[in-house]
Image (cartoon, rainbow, N blue to C red; front, side, top):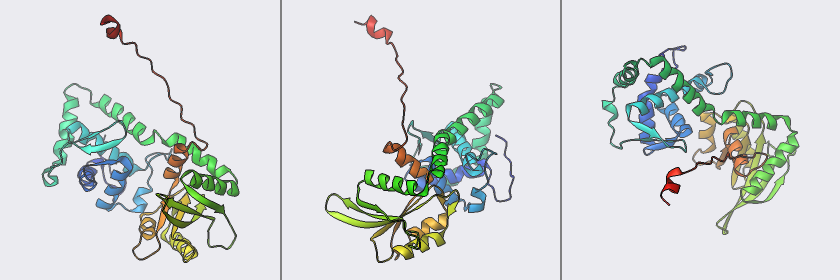
Length: 291
């Protein structure tokens, strides 16, 4: 993995090694890829414009996420972090002193360990494949699902949101979708522990780009005085400023569901998404011998 700088403000993978450790410590020692990446964005002050730079023409992952994957790979091979089969990454020691982390030593040690066996090129190829698989293992089906959502009728998408909310435990879910209603598409009631209930107004927006703070403010203005909470559902993403606006102190709270989470929820509730498990049969020869 050659260190390259295609943009003045685009960090190289080795420059993201320390922020990755910092992110894991901030997250309590472990985190998912999404949690780690999002935390690194803040620590390294990575702008929205930089996050829009894609790794390749396929547009499956952004360049920063790709480089962060390389950072995790080097940290794992150096022995500072590890990952589980569930995709959770964790520090191997809780008392890592960030001030003593030598990035150059990490990079050199990992590369030298492969140079000794003359496998440097093979190492790069194999690990790049693993990284791309790690970052895109869910991208294919999610991209297909999001494309499908873009091709259904607007009222069908609203009914899908209605069904999803019902499956999630909402009651009295209605789709309104009236023109000039400030973007409000429906309402419902969510009950907690069978005692507390909250009136929720939701907006469904099929969008390929990022939702901005102004769109969050417009939605909040429309829902104010009409519900306890707001729910904004989109096939796109939310900018970091939009996320901050949604949880701003003193303002009615708005929960956010982006395209990534929407796909996960549809899969969880088996709404148009079916998961097939492949059976792997292993004969335990020793078991028979020990009868």
